[in-house]
Length: 126
Image 1 (tube, one colour):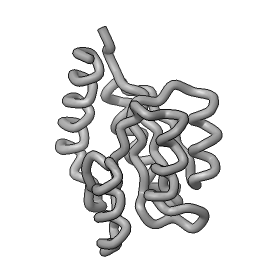
Image 2 (cartoon, helix red, strand yellow):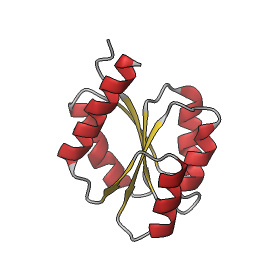
Image 3 (spheres, rainbow, N blue to C red):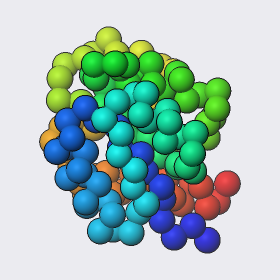
Image 4 (cartoon, rainbow, N blue to C red):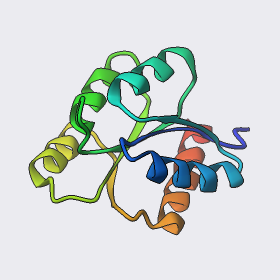
């Protein structure tokens, strides 16, 4: 039985990533933080990750580019976007390509925890 998920938070805003990580860690999840797409890919090479929670707009690679980079090596990785900006084209592109959902910043923690619980249930059953 999968008791908790491993979550990779990718956000160029270090304080935002840290705040999310603190809450998820307190709820028993294994949390990794990356402040760039390149750092996220390095973490994914070395660690089992169930959920990728990524910002859409980042300097080195946007969320869609990061998602595309993970599809080949991590096809079962659940990816959730989060954004504070109106990046409609990128968001729509990500949703068409398989992003599960988009959260608006500041992130509704209750909804995020619900999504993680649902994801854990799906992983356990499949």
